[in-house]
Image (cartoon, rainbow, N blue to C red; front, side, top):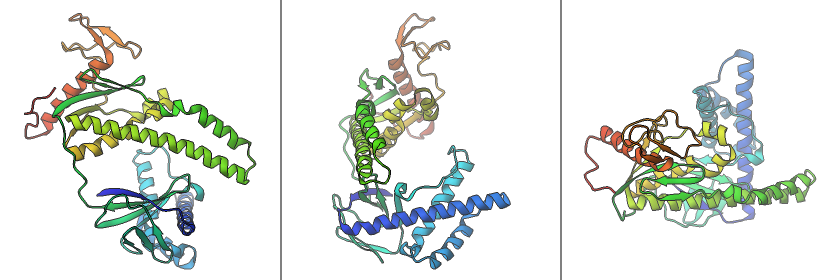
Length: 369
């Protein structure tokens, strides 16, 4: 499946989409309330099948809920069930929670209840919505209707078309070490500095937050101040995404093999908090993996417990190395190692070893630099 996002034109008719998203929030909150009440009374959990049947009956009694397609309502129940499963498996730290309608962001159109004609999305019972057809699409499986904090509407179409492929300029291999002061240290010696977009715009965010806190609740001025704050956050996100996409293209364009470290982001956030969220390593890795498929680049993850910074080229492991030690002298061979550069080289070597052990054929027949 391949996702393509299109922005809807601003129109008075978009109020119906906002209403459908708000109704989706009501369905979510009602389903969640049923789960919590059932657990309080019987100490159990309502299965997905029972929940969907019950919500389907409630939908027929509620005229507002009838605006949503039956499959859309079922998908909301599936979303809630998946959230609980993630909590039970301890993937998520907390169970799903109630959401305000203004903070609910999407609903899904599956096989029925909609059609597409050119740059028009036709939703049954609601109306026709035009969007900017920036790219071609074909064989659409479903459509996710989203809105952001600025109340802009996007249609994310899930297709099974083959994504555009790019040609690599070189068949190199590279290892990458993530850092705080330096965003990436590459095994070829190149260093990519941390952009820290949130830190650079922190004064702007603080000013917008202060203006919001001074406005009277429920007033139009407060709504405007909230929009200004949301716009500032979205601008930061767009800058960060642009940096990530361009960097991912640059790395995949010149390398057919990239080794990265599988980081424990939760533990890193506990140590360094906002800075880790600003750098957004996890988001970058997801984009890198997506771009790598288009270039035919192999991404190999190295285990987070591999001592990449502590292992010298001679094989000696410095177990007493501290995080504050940026350079260290090997007690065995006497070589002075620069921490991040050594880590990137070790990650590359370990990534090649892991990939060779996993692959039946030798993909390293090319000459890597």
